Image 1: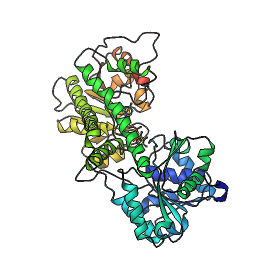
Image 2: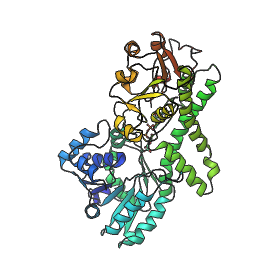
Image 3: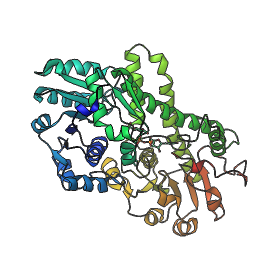
Image 4: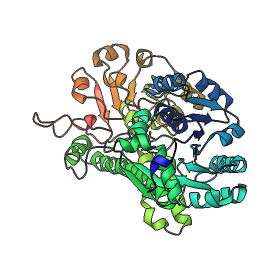
Length: 466
Ligand code: UGA
C-alpha cells in the first residue's frame, strides 16, 4: 500500500443525514476531519445546525454538540457546495423497499451519485454506505464516469455500515470491522487515510472487491435474521409440546459455537433494515438466477411474521377467547428499545391487529409515541406506563424497554382490571409476576414452565445479550 503520509487528511462530505449519515458525519468530525453534511430535507438540516438530533439515539446529541463546538462540522442543503468541498463523499441515503415489489428502491442512491458526478470537478472518491443489491456499485461506477467531466478520474468505492440503532455511536467509533470495497489502489489508500484513526486503534479491516463488499452487508443482516427466526421456529415447536424455548435458548447459547447473541426468542425482528434487506437480497438473487440459494430467507420472513399473529392469539387466549371490547395495554411501539423507530415494528403491528379485532388498545412507548401516532392515528396513546395499565384486561409487553422490565408487578397490578400479562419479548421474570397473582404467557413457553431454572444455572434467555 502507498505511504499514507503522502495523503493529507481528506475533506469529507456525507450525503443523507438519516440515522446512518448523521451518525457518520458527526463521528468523522469528532475524529478530527472537516465534514460537510447534506440533506434535501431543510428542516432536518436546520435541526442539526442548531445541535438537535432529529431522532432518538442515545449519546448522539452529546457528540453533535462536541462536533459543532469543534468548528469542523457543517451542514448544507446545497449540492454545489458539497461537490466543491469534498475529497471523499459518503453516500448514506435510504434504500427502502419498493412500493410494488420486494426489491430495494434505488432511486435515492442513483440521484445522489448522479448529482455528485455532474458537479465534481477535481479528483475525488465517491463512497457508498447504503445497503444495496449486489452489482449496484459496478453499475454506479459506469454511470458516474459517464456523467462526470472527469471520466474515470472520478472513482467509486463501497464501505458498508454495520451500526445498530441504539448503539450507533459505539458501532461507528468502535466497529467490529471495517470493509472497503475498492477497484483501485488509490481508492484503498484514500479509505485507509479516511479511517486512519480507527485502523490505528486496531479495528480489523477487510479489503475486497465491490461486489463482495456489497454482499458482506446483506449476508450479515440475513444471518442475524436467520438466527432470530431459527429460535422463533423452535418456539413454534415448543408451543405444541410442553417444552420451554427460554430454557432451550439458554442451553444452546452455552455452546460457544452457537452463542447467545441474536438468539432471543419472542416477537421477532423489525425495523428499517433486517426485514427489507432479506427481501431485497432474495429478490436480487432471483434476478441473478441463484434464487434457490437464498430461498430459505422467504421462510425466515414467514416465521418472523407468524410470531406477530401468534402474539395476538395468546392475548386473545388470555382475554378468554374474544377480543371485542377488551382493553389491552400495549407496552412499546418502537421496533426495539432505545429507539424511536417504528418502521416495520412488530409491537405496532400487534397493536394494529388487536385493534382490527375490536380490542381497545392503549399504547405507551417511552420515545416512539409520536412516530407511532403518525402511522396509526386510530390507536390511543398515553404518556406513561401507569396510564396505559389503567383498567387494562391484558397487559402486553411488546418492546423490552428497561422501564417495563423494572416495573413492579404489585403497583402495576393495582391499576389493571385483570392481572394478565403477555411477555412478547421474554423480558420478565415469570415468577415475579405469577407470585403476585398474574397470569403470565410468553411465546414458546408453557403456562407453567415444565423445567424450573436450577440454582447453578445463570439467568435464562431474558438475559441473553443482543
Ligand atoms: C441491524 C443490524 O444489527 C446492524 O448490524 C445493521 O447495520 C443494521 O441492521 C442496518 O442494516 O442498518 P438494527 O436494525 O438497528 O441493526 O437492529 P438490531 O439490533 O439488529 O435488531 C433488529 C430486530 O431484531 C429488532 O426488532 C430486535 O428486537 C430483534 N431481535 C434482535 C430479536 O427479536 N431477537 C434477538 O435476539 C435480537
